[in-house]
Amino acid sequence: MARALLFQLLLLTALAAPSQGNHLGPTSRLRYSRFLDPSNVIFLRWDFDYKAEIITFELQVRTAGWVGLGVTNRYTRVGSDLVVGGVLPDGNVYFSDQHLVDEDTLEKDGSQDAELQRLTEDAVYTTMRSSRPFRSCDPYDQDITSDTVRVLAAYGPDDTLKLHRERTFVKSIFLLQMIQPDDLHVPEDTIIHDLELTDFLIPEDDTTYACTFLPLPIVSKKHHIYKFEPKLVDRSETMVHHILVYACGNASTLPTGISDCYGADPAFSLCSQVIVGWAVGGTSYQFPDDVGISIGTPLDPQWIRLEIHYSNFHNLPGVYDSSGIRMYYTSQLRKHDMGVLQLGFFTFPIHFIPPHAESFMSYGLCKTEKFEEMNGAPVPDIQVYGYLLHTHLAGRALQAVQYRNGTQLRTICKDDSYDFNLQETRDLPYRVEIKPGDELLVECHYQTLDRDFLTFGGPSTINEMCLIFLFYYPRNNISSCMGYPDIIFVAHEMGEEASDSMEGMMAMNNVEWTPENIKKAEKACKEAQQTVIIKTIDEIVENTTGWVPEITPTPRGPCSESSGGKVEPQDKAPAGFRTAPVALSGSSTATPRRLPLAALLLGQGAVSWLLATLQSRV
Image (cartoon, rainbow, N blue to C red; front, side, top):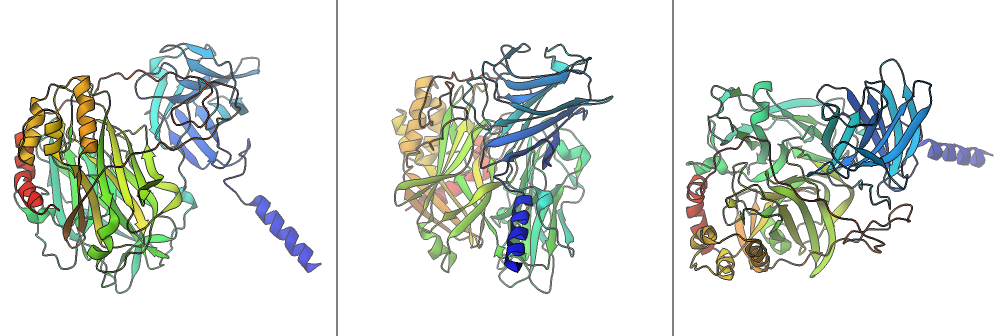
């Protein structure tokens, strides 16, 4: 009898517990929410069943007319996928799956793939709740993916279905968030510690990297930092491009004051192991309940370097800033000490992107075979649980791919719809194991149709970067592992003479950047031997070499309700055809002054760095 009662109790508990495999019904709590417009008229709630690949939306709009919600792309609203609905004056409800045939005209899809769960109207709001598959077979439906999704919301003052620009909004959102912060544990003994600049006068320059060195909390026993968030000042918030916190080795001799991170005094670029980072569009981030940043033991860093990148494109005078990072820590220890591994293309002007490129790929290789030797102790398998992607304005997509024994293992993380204005730390749907000896490749996709000049790797927002930060455990001493191609080989492949790296970089200015030469340069960069630079928290640097492996696209499963004609190159069983959107150029942002290559090299101190690097190449 007792066993039977226990079985029934366990069964009821299992049925009551939320699960990623459970279908979300009309009254289920939706864990995520966001306002979609500046006036807070449009409010979106959503949640998803990751296993069943179903997402549920609830759109609440301050209107008595129709409402619509869907997905669009970066370049044009034509072809945007929307569900629209409303309540007529007689109380009847209408709802349908539609798409935009031009900028403001809707047309009903032949296949209705959205399911209405609830649609109500009261004296203030029209509320529409519906669900849809991540990926339907309707060629007019946009996919819901683990990429950044550009969510389109629209409404009307009445029930006439017509889009108007003043009532149509697009917001980039990472919809498939695996962890809801409200579901995470908040320790009762939480202590707050701020790492910030104080009344720093932002220079009247396009780009400033301000650095200072600050102590971490002094504690008598081990604690864990479990959450961080940006501290931004209203007047200067739009000028803050990113904030990074680097751990310093305890043997480091550190300077005082605030100075240019990468200027005349090289001491201000010491400490290169990132422990937390924030960039444009990001918010607070709380680590999973089993990981934290360890502080308070002899092996833990005692000081950090705080780096803030300012973009003062309008050269405004007299702006003071006290931005920084707020950290939350606790004595309630987590199971794992976490670390951050920086991957990508080494940031300096050997990285170049031609002008007028509809598409240009760059690659940065990491070889982990030297990790144990440089760590000074055996390196356990790395368990990756999160990531942060970073390029500048020309970036369109990034991915990190893992190889073992020469075979592609998996794509660790990616975003095929990267948005510079939404850079946030994201959780993986599952933990990824990296073993010593694995190779990691970062691929960055750029577009420069709106540029008439070469774009070089560098610190300015109009220069470029190609970086991925992997959040992992258990922590080791490796801070970064990044690669770059042999620029002399690239120059020769482009028909230019070059006897050293400096001449190779300068030779890129002599190339006529036709579409054919753009593709030729991309191929040469991919085929060139890569120098891989590995760095530790104690500023130990070693180089090795390698070659960029091929990337095989990950096959995708069949679409839901398999009766349509959607096809993409990575599909397992294509059944039809879908045209790609036309890429359009243009930007509404202010245009800063361009840094010429010579000034960029001098500003970064790259000449001396190149000589030192080339002398130490393997």
